[in-house]
Image 1: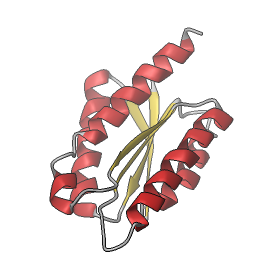
Image 2: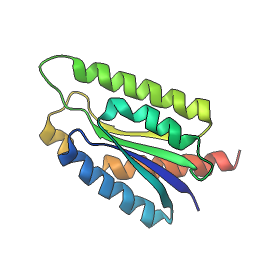
Image 3: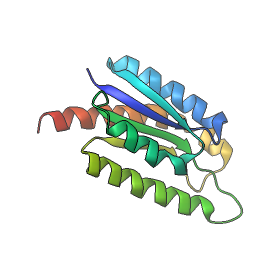
Image 4: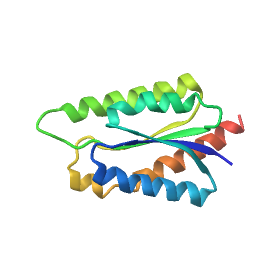
Length: 136
């Protein structure tokens, strides 16, 4: 059985709350356990928490959930690129699947709310990659 760590951004909680619920449902449906859930202020803060979870012996994979909505500047693009890049580094450095369940950037809050299934998709990807890597 795969044991997961979840990192959930609190910013845009109207979106991430549903993403977290979808992630938990996907984990339960797959027979996986959630060893720990860490709530962080925003998506930009997720890589450090993901790294801490990836270091734990009782965590086989980490799914990161967040929503980055567009604003008046290109701040959302900067945040999105930084988060994706750093999470990839955490995954490779720790040799643990870390999946990106962050919707955005470049979307409105309403568009982000329509994509709460990204929480489930992040868990499903984490579980699939953990299974694949176990066979290598």
